[in-house]
Length: 398
Image 1 (cartoon, helix red, strand yellow):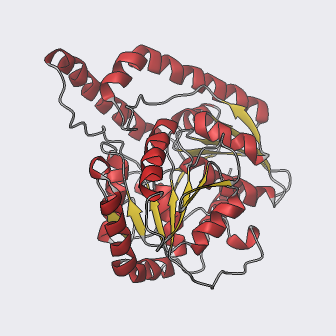
Image 2: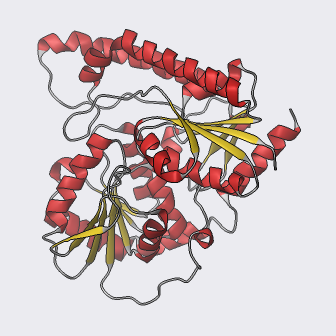
């Protein structure tokens, strides 16, 4: 593939999209492919550490409350339709300019409309990576004042319109890669209401994770002491900060029956662990350190982001999942992981030390064997290699 040029535009909210695109980009780089990234917010901070060439795109985001939950009213009042639309148009113009200048052979969009539309306008072969086809409005159980209700009603109507436009835009792709297990084990099952006319484009390829053999010498840790609880927090900054604070307060008082490591998932944070009582806290972990810890862990505590769940599935690790209260995608992921017998799901609003300790004990007791069996369904197939082959086929037919 020497001489091939690849343009990758992942959604910049949180780190799930950029980490799986990173795995793809490194695989292509090893084959002599020239890669250019385009992203914003958290993904941009990640790219600054990665060594890849990147373009800084106009940021787009939801407004959130202090606890990290999406606030439809604040998003509507502060972003507004006009401001949000103008931000998207500016991002789209930036994508058109960058793709035109770079002249890639293939464009990959990870849940990013502007990248996909720009590639369509410029007639570039395009691959879409996503694990949520139908974007549902966040559930909002908060009681609102009477004078706020008209704005919330308008927000619901606009959300439905935007969701319909998103689904139409996804169809502009030549190929849709879903980094998930095939039925009946699909984690994102409840988020994949794909229209019949689009299904022919869809390929479920499994997790998009780099082989551990590319990260260290492949020696597995077999010496077991206390069970290792690895709490790896991900998601947008506000969401991360809230859960990091909550878990730090809980875990530092945990009994010494466990080895406890907390990854704050802050791409702007410092590298190196800080001990607080029985807890070791990492603002940021290198990829090697993160995977070593993941591989050693007995249980993973996290949000219910798709990428983290798929990492746990690939490693056969049972989970304790704490989805944000009104995040429909993560709630669906958590529900499915629980149905498959690999996770215990907790309500963030009721989270305390006793509840978390009981959940960890329960998932270690009840979910470990199911997690190992689910990981075995992956076989020897590589999701990353499937993407490489898909790009090769797309180039060969254009």
